[in-house]
Length: 196
Image (cartoon, rainbow, N blue to C red; front, side, top):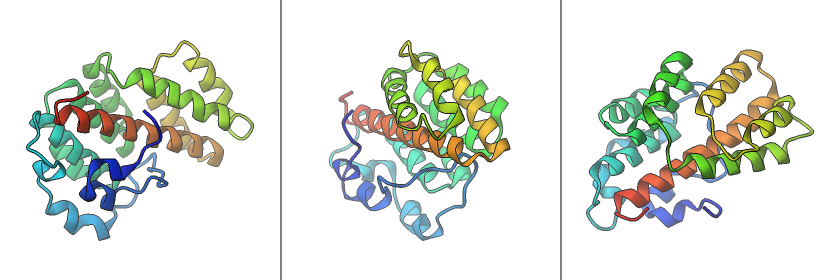
């Protein structure tokens, strides 16, 4: 995936997603200004033509709620999507709420996901660019050397950063979490349209 451009996903998504936002590692603070717009969106409305895969369309809506730190609303949608991708969003949501064990449960249900390879590469890029500032950067870069994404390791690192409060580690992990969101959203959007 090239650089994420929210405008590639239609005007509704472009209005709701800013490329420079870093998602919180914790629950964050819900963006009340986005609530009315999110409430008014049906999953089908995100697409120019009727989506081919309704679960993937719902996953896109779950992702948008999560982007704006509405964890309960995201959770209500993701838990109805009985697919590896639904479990992926579900796992992210529990990681964000600080229920790290439950997050790992949902990531076990994901198995190997098509986003893992590109995510490992994106995380390696982020770790390389932060190597001097973050104590995690070198450690995490070594984990990614084989090109594999380990969602359980990422859950552990997020938990560690949330507990320690280290600004550099938190910044690195938030940048990786943004790339995770972007790659998974792109995957869902394309799959909803029948192209992945």
